[in-house]
Length: 528
Ligand code: SER
Image (cartoon, rainbow, N blue to C red; front, side, top):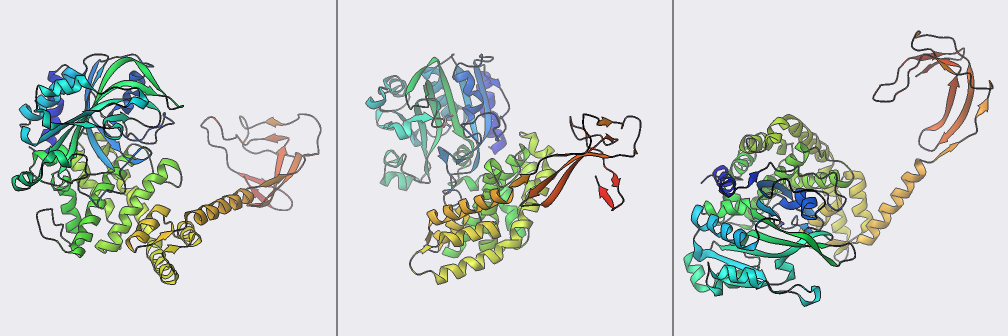
């Protein structure tokens, strides 16, 4: 099955179980202070789960764009180095809001995987929550008993709070969960070591594919658990991993979610990507990692921009800029790309995903332009910055680089500190975080000082409120200054504010652009 068919079969299956199919929410979140980006399918339903919003549909399914690059769920460091983590990924999900619970959720998950998709039952393992006395949450006997109907007991693994109690963030909905893992190793490997021993052990071919969360609690700001008004089901299946299982490959990057993007990188760079089955050298492995990073990151950046988040120097915009700069540098160093090229992947992405996510098609031009500009601007300083970094490393005795130098790279060359940290790590170095922070604070103080202004008192030349607006009838008028004051700005120098007795200039406001023109005096012309 193609990835498109796999996605559709999931939605069709849950539609047949009376689920309303809804579109993905934007990946960029504007109205939840606890989150910057959508990190799970359930985010858009948070208020329903908490009981704050009414339940419109009690059964919903979708494929949600998620980004896990900050906060509680952050996979950024793994991306590219392994073959199954991503910054942006699609999460296939089905929800019950106060409707069905564990019995139906687990039965349908099993039915979909083994009867619809016909995945081999012998390769599947499941996990249930072992309980946590400190939190006063018991062992999930119910889920355990349900699973016993479908799998032998030795395929059911008891998991701790880290693996089997899912929380959206430090606060918010949470509950025990039951995961389904798949073992994609060869028969020979499976005969040697049981898949059971490799579940949750970071094995690239024994991976979690589906998480069924039984939402029962709200984690409060003080850390305590509060029972939710109703019980809900929140499930999330890693779409790219499911495609890996269905397409008989052992890396997400060998699925048709990524192969068209990889082919485009190969075409642009003239280099080859070698997949898991092919032999590799250490240099080829660096190329492989760089290609994986780039084809992963372009999706995150492109969809974030399509959803309205432009790269910038603060907040969510800086997260996007950092991801893109990381990709640019991987290309520059390992693929020898000295010109903007990542923007050229947007077309491939739009063709591939535009049918299901129309925003990437409708914003294709903007996304391409923004990425191209970002690439061009970072490439202008990247080479010099890398040279400086080499010099700094050469001059460093010991393995810790000075934080001041890392700050200089950030401030002058636009190197996000985590990018510098990554490059240093490749060379076996770290840097002094405290010194970096101190420099950053000093810079902030300097720019605060630079924006300081001293405002003088008004000098009154004409008493009373004589000023009037004449712009409805006139565009020119003879005027007198009625008052003025002096502004001493560290940034802009000495300025004066003046008030005129009559003015035809309409001010900016209410969406209206202010008028432009000139003020003619005996001493010269002032531009307004
Ligand atoms: N919220 C759960 C997760 O993100 C299940 O959807 O894994």
